[in-house]
Length: 310
Image (spheres, rainbow, N blue to C red):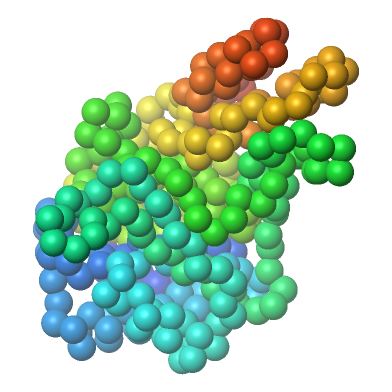
């Protein structure tokens, strides 16, 4: 089985080609209908036309989702209430979470408050669904014997920086999402080998994360130039995801007892930073400053999945 399956075409038409109950996880970042330029198409529909488009692709998405499956949908504030209504009242899916992605930079305004977040609705096909909490925990701020040192639930407010234009992983796409953001969704709601679908693949972020986390992925994209961009991105060597929740870099306080500190520090990188080589320097420096000890990063294993892309 090929790891990554990229298909060029209309999302609704391509969704119709998938079998019922064949997808474990859907990560969808549809156009927000804000007039964005996506090369061969513009994100600008009439209100009723956009709602109809949303209803049609969500209906197909619900059909292909497995009974234990989960769907994450990004949406702008103007249409999110309609999206929620379709998912819950029309399609009878089960509400799980309303995640807020808080980013540090955004559109500046002089009248009204500048937007600094996107919303992500999380729904499941049934009340029996996958959620791998241990895979997405964040480090505790303080060490306490009663705390789970494996970490805490990250909550529903996620802070990830935009992929800025100076970032070497920045693609020529107007709405590229951070890899760390997608990593959390895939780790939480799927297992290795589970099939992940992105109906609006864009710059290929979801497919890149699937590739590195050993999940087969299907990506639909209307613009053939973005398909080629994604193929190039998947062929690049992996040096860590391009973004990280800053809480993953923090070192718990009160690790004064050497035996406790040693055991914890041995596990921190594997638990929280194994896909974030670019964050290791911040973490190891913080350990040195706080406790005066050195932490050696483990050798990075090469992901064989890159040998089997398309």
